[in-house]
Image (cartoon, rainbow, N blue to C red; front, side, top):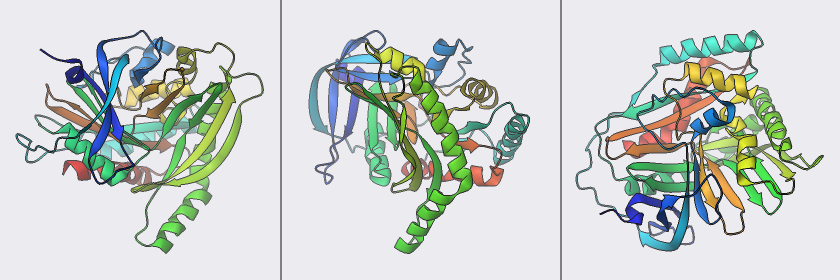
Length: 366
């Protein structure tokens, strides 16, 4: 008989003692609550929830079928050591892209043609890597991915047979009392081999016109999204083109804030801003239509969100990127990476950016 812990777990690294692979877990009830109706719960929203907001048709062709949304109430909080057992693990994982480089470039060119025709200004196009008939230890993968990436939103979640193994650098939404914050990422550069080289790459990213153009377009979408739930005149851009550095990459990050209207619910905030601007494009709805048309799978959990709603109704939600998704029953594993396409983008460069973002997951699974 499955216990609640067998069915639902959610955890994050305890950074006060990095010498041990511990994480805090929320032991949760079997039953989930209605959409954001409860406080003190784990919140998960699949990218495909957009179909309910905008009434899109669901392709439902992803081998991973996470629920559209799940809100699991917390019973208690505990800490325990992650298993390092490797018994029964597949000795070699054969990861294959669902799109070849040639196919990627062909789709890139078609999407850029949409931009040239004025159909869209920017779109986040993603490609998936997958492996079939594999057995992995999700807990061990989580520890490895965390040690490689050390991102602010490391997360391990289990929903029945489905696992989310995430090391996301990006904040989707954070509510603190009446303030709502989003921090879209748009702009990526590799880390340097030396301190001087690393600093040079940071400066080049910060000054790169193409990356700044991508970032400001997405910031405009965020401002528009937040305005739907903001008190009049309170939407502000606190930081623009800021550079944040992680173990694998430098990222261009902006910060947009607002004061929420009175009585704004969790669902109001999600419906106004989801999916996040950085993972769609501009205009947002047309970009989502083209994403559905050109990407191989519906995204499902990828570029959705996961986080925690506390007892006071405040919440913090990450963007589910730089994440591995695994179904232990189907023995199926995948991860997805992408980049922004604009009129200034180059197909070869964007493909290389995708591989750069895939590097940590590839390393963990090799």
